[in-house]
Image (cartoon, rainbow, N blue to C red; front, side, top):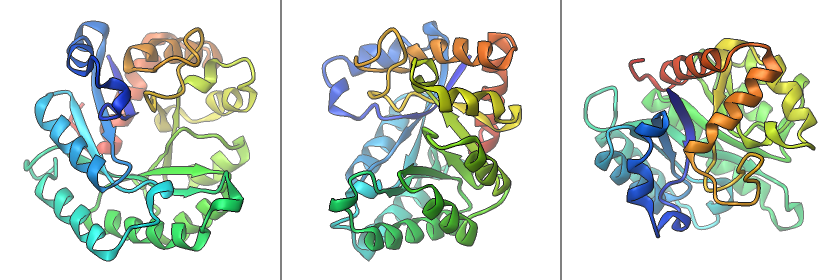
Length: 264
């Protein structure tokens, strides 16, 4: 069975057929999904979706692109939302804080100090609640590493979502205790670095994800993505790592359950 560790099924792209699509997953070999928050409102949506479907879990947090209007009261709201729905305490299905981090891709339009402030605040929340952190990092490898090294390390520190840096940086994040999430990019012709990382990551730190509705694998690149397409990522990883597809599915399932604290 496939465990999609990072999805956004509350996204408007799924409005036309969300229920029909999600109901098709078990028959398609998709066993579990973690739906990831990007802002306070979407975090509430993630919790609601996890309440409706047995196989969906939730992460709550604010993406770096959405921190401009964030305030201390919003962190308090996320804290309450997570505490009241903690999976490990049987209250609900919140299993992580995220997605959080840095996005400096559009450097001329970014307030890096503001992103750092709220990244650090949410890492502290992950520490307080003893939850893994789902890390978004774009054009900010060293800054992300420095922040995580200072504030969030350990065996279940979190996941480097949609990992897009070098093997050398992957080694540093792995040494901090992070898992590496890989998706559709490993199927791209121009995905050389992602393929190098995919071949390098230790088996017990490898995770698969869609980031849907984004980053569809070949041959669906540019189309709406969903968890059923992860069999193409599994196939690519199987070829890159020289193991069977069944082994990739089993290993990434066990890794995801361990990271998120869910029984395998």
